[in-house]
Image (cartoon, rainbow, N blue to C red; front, side):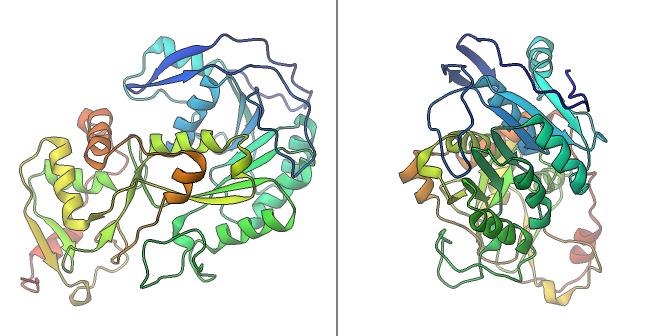
Length: 377
């Protein structure tokens, strides 16, 4: 894998590459763009022509970044991952051939550093120069400002925000024009969106709901799979009829690609997720179907009757939480490829079903619930 040297010499222009067709975990992506470097446009201007870009990905060693970087390389872009270097810079996708992985790995550049070392960020990024920034792991506005300062000719800043910024409401689904919650635990993402707007940056902000898929480091589908594999009842808070929404990581990565250089996405916010909603009970049954397990036994309980300490008994917000993706559909033509069961099957077959997972099973809170009679009928 190539590495960015800290002498910060400019990269040479990319050589011409042929159009290609490749397999991305069973899904074929066709690329046929002209790989010719363009002169940087002033900040706030958007060049919509398909061309090879010098792209910086902040983060990129986990989950979303792994799938996104694959697609960017497929499109012929020059991709640099900015990471602390504590984890491997690249890793193979589940089921990926050595040949395909090595071909990808050879095209990825790495800039090692801490994004909270603002002086280093400014100097290193200014020396390198990038056309586009994908910020996958930014949480606070103060982490973003040095990047903007270092890249005055930046063409586009594509930010991974969260649907968690919306103010809790009786009117659902959440739409991009809805009120946001300044006290949300995602308030740093809200402040980042405000910063990008105030600085006149040409930005696009993506607000996913719950993300799932292979290599997920959050215990979303994995939480259900652990219980299904162990043949245990699945404890679900209250009625189990709370409605939520999940979006597959590959669909999210595709959405990130579709906003790149897209004039319609200039200074816009988009909700990105699956286009159907599901109840907690329905999600448990969908996970069972995806993994080929029997119909699960569902146990409903009142969380107020239990003290779980610092442990989390259920991986979702105990409320209705879902967002409209119509704006992305109408303006950008973004339509999710995966239905919920199809996506969960993909996740199971390429990850948990292979015996890989991020967190070991922990049934401590389940046993507390099942050991008491304070269960809703």
